[in-house]
Length: 536
Image (cartoon, rainbow, N blue to C red; front, side, top):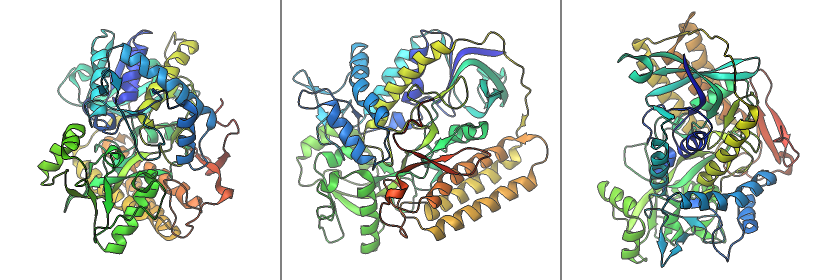
């Protein structure tokens, strides 16, 4: 039996930091779908938001977060984030994390939606990579942490609403004892879902291709409540690559250094739209770019840095500069950009200590919904959320205690390589559906059509599989489940707010100052904001 005190699903910052914190409490296993460095956290360019300067204050950070969240933030959770975030930063600096500094002072950047310079960076535009590498180094120092790459979560081991571990498919010989994949049961007293978001379910995305919402689908199937999944954040500035749906992220921090967005005639189109112009909250900038592209009949707008100091750009954004050069563009001049699916604002409902509806199952990071993000994530709040809530969740788990005896679960999965092509075909179909029917701008017609198409895909799978759970078919089912979890609340929410924009209901409606809630076996429902719904 593969038995641990903690199983951490996912190897982004939330998972790695959780593992590091949990290693002082017992034996830890990290499982990750691909490689340990294949995560949104590793690729994050912008930075990490926390109050560290005397001219800033947690209350100002809170106000910026609430404004970006468009009325759906849970204020108690935001209070925790902005007040505990600086302490987590102090701790990792004390442990050896190096943030960019000048003359002995932290170098602080400005990003969209922030009214103060509070964004810490490392390696210029490689913050995610630096902080992830730092955390990996801490994980590798701990003898009681084991990492299992190329291991995919299939299900949770749940009995009587209590989680006893996970069911996974592993290509890792450390688990299978052979060089071929098979189902593996892993048991633990505490399971943490830190598996990231869902944005790679769209055809144009900044995310790694593994980020398709496996953890979300598995938690939903196990009975967890899922909240606010209609809010998908599209990053305004993904580098436009002709004949490719993939997008290389051009950090928010580039616009923070006063880069300009230009239409096809060379005019700054954001100035009359918002008082912060290019530094408006992401949903406004992304939607404005999308509409400008439609008006210009162009697949991109231009991001101009040619009015800025080229040496500053080279020093501040070395990784982005090099990547643009690889694609034939000069970051010190003008580059083509277009929005791309980037961040899942909603997720698995969790309280302020990371607890879910299932005992011994915790969640944190992008896969969770703590109420912090509201309808739209404030730039660079995601990495600090990982640190704050992972720390709280590990401390809470100690109070729950360990399992003395585990119940027995039987294996049930098989893998038919002939179905790999079927899975890819469905994945591509779902990706196109998401872009077309639940993208930046939505309507009742597109969402209804999208849900009907998902129903037909699900029926095809039901007709194919008899008896045993087949790996590829179940993976396709999870994709369809995630797509439906996004489309159904988007159809219900007859208004536009944050990362959800309905062309047929273009204004915000006070009647929808509510969270959307989905739970398997129950009709879609809503929950009031700031009314204690997250307190359980």
